[in-house]
Image (tube, rainbow over the protein chains, first blue to last red):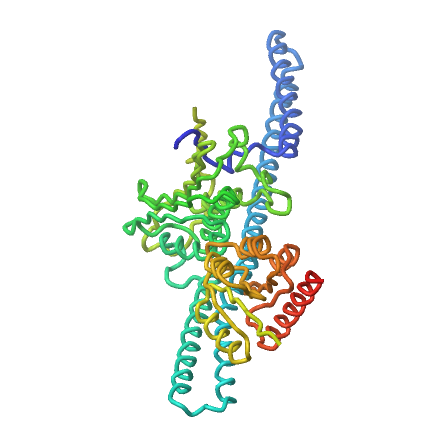
Length: 346
Length: 131
């Protein structure tokens, strides 16, 4: 289905107009001064013994010092901008984790209320039997036993829901920085189960059990996977389809692919989907930051996100993550990665 | 006085079973269905007064079942039962013609009250139609 492939790269995203203005304002005056100095030197050089020579040498030195100072100041400002951006993304990632817990609470309530409703009926039925006239017969005794057994079964269901909720808020098992991506995918699928049922979307899993552990933070990577799954489900809303989740070894890492059979992305919008605040959803449904944050999280782990688009047939998001470095137990903070390239398709 | 004929629709088999026993013990005539298609089959086969319908069952939309019941059996009264704390489905259900809604877990007294209310409405409508 390869029609058009794009790779996100935050570090290469177009500079904000304010940043561009600062750069111009800081670079142009010293540059002009320097050129003037060069010209003066040239003319002074043609007039031997001129008093302009020491003056132009001094001018050159002054402009070099000024340019140096400007560069230092500029790089400090740029570092500050990058720091603020990282802090913002970090905070947004944290908030969107809380928000998806809020969304999940709706399906958790439903999941809990079903076994509770059954236990409620069983307790009521036991009460009915106790107040009945024939509470001592063998038949009634059998009813008692069946009801108590049901209560135990339903408690088991509740316990399973509680266990799932706990794995949502904290992820025991792997040391930080080493994530079993197949398990994470399966757990993340639980969280969209309600949407899957509501949208009538079929799930196909092709999980390669031999892939290595990947580098990254489990809670953050789950946000990425959850976001990609929700996007895929949104694309198939109202029409149904198939959500395909695939893991495979890719180089010395793992490639996770989330594919839908929705309408795909309009070719003229494809280049913009990784841009901050770009969204095709209604205002109250999308912030336009999901893919931006996902890219940020994945790039920080040393990975990348690519999208493969086939208008009319759906699209696939590939998340490529490096294998965890064994013995290294901390998530690498990661600087700019040059792995991203935009490969426009046919 | 006529016996109220109830249809209980829920994908949770044990919920249907036990609530049916409790309602039968209280003098109602109760049938259970584990999904929308089975409910519509039963409704086509014999008359019912009130349907207790779960709005959130896997694979099917309870509201679609509600629409089908309203279209095919307009005289039958529907009370929605939901395990979901969100009331959006309930509001939408009322708009589509449900009498009322109950949140799971349900109290038997609430169920009885809603069923009686729905049944009374049906009797009054039938009397009006006969006049």
